[in-house]
Image (cartoon, rainbow over all chains, first blue to last red; front, side, top):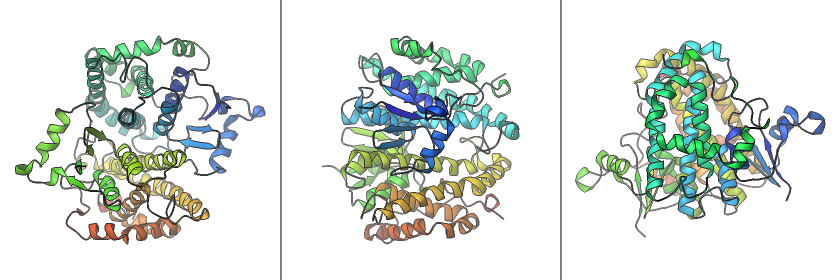
Length: 244
Length: 244
């Protein structure tokens, strides 16, 4: 089979990174198309072409995974597809729906993190909504951050109670790799708020460390394939949005 | 088999309504637990109990569907489960992922609609974020509304090009019933903005009318089981948030 093709905006981790981490952990062959040179069929034009001239159901936005004839969008949808096929999700139906449920809660959290810097208009610059961003970010760090992380900590507590190292067993699911990214990103974007809540999240911290030490993930994180966090992605370090 | 149990906040349609409409269209037996009297095991305490003392994976928030031993949360996850079982989604894997993809785009839209009246803090009153809400709603009606509806219109155009009456064939999927609710809710919340964009969405309007005329849906909409739109749900009519 040809390798999967991933299409995502170049230059930022963004939502595409949740797909990349699962592909890496699963040892799944993929081409990060848009990051290849235009002369080799990559670049932003390759993404625009896919959005404008789809075969079958048009995707609204990247990330997009092309798997043979199938073109899939929406992170949680792509991960569900990969999870089933590559051992990155439970094999039984109930477990698969639970993985999907958790990933949709990650999706909600990602949207809230994005909106800390874009509370008014996703299409306009941060600088045009800075005042509102400060208010929204204060609510996020003060009320939402602890609520979400506390929830995932409780999920991990349940998993450990069932003897699982990771959420669903002895190897990581795509939810585990996603929670790794959440922990890394929150620490990058909100170092002060993160350091306040992190002591209450020992299981999430241990999960983050365990995922970072997985051989394929460790190699990926040390390579140029892993983009650095920056202020064009979901997780942005604007010190004025962090806690005092 | 025992009927499904649906748990959702009483008194509003909210996200629960997307699940209800699919259950109704599918002719699926269910109990709307929280809306039953406390003396009969209903009321808000029944929901709080489920959130606090889950068996298995804890849900973070309603709507929650209980199907025997399985407790499922997240609208798109519940609909995926029901869709597979009750003919409310394509039977093939690619089609099922496309239904899921579209429903996740509906989910994104619902979150944006919610945030028009709660752009700063989901846990605080609208009145405490009215100024920001005006700015966010102007961006929503001016830029996002047409973008989302135009996208779904384009999806329907593709379906009709393949000879389908509904998105995936000759009978409604849960995506079709969800788009019905989106159209009804947007017209309720933003009557002026909706009337501006609606002429460009003939297929979405025809879909809305076709779903409304489905026998089970029509009976449901005429019954007391269908709650009215109101200002505690996702779709709220605050005239100051609509276009001039």
